Image (cartoon, rainbow, N blue to C red):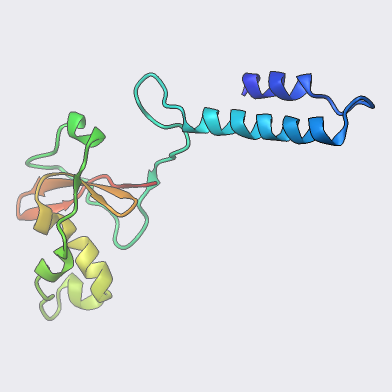
Length: 143
């Protein structure tokens, strides 16, 4: 940001600033901002991506977990299986799945289909952990 300020301050809007140099100034500032937002930091993370808790559907399961993915796997999540929703079994009468929408039930079952690991489903990174009786979301973030 300091680079942008120094670039923009060198092109002040004084009486010497004509239309052409003002356009040049705006282009240079735009290029500087683009370079700053697309650059990766020392760890390889892009600063323009902000991770937020995934608030779609039912909340993630807090644990304890029998098995959890390694933090190293978080950097390169696997892609969600194609057509994974078709692999979700129908909810049984009286179960949680019978009380929520089909999409919410399918989202809740994502980890039972994918097992333990980090997965990318659209713009959401999903962390799946093993429980005593299946798998559950255990820390998902949306970009």
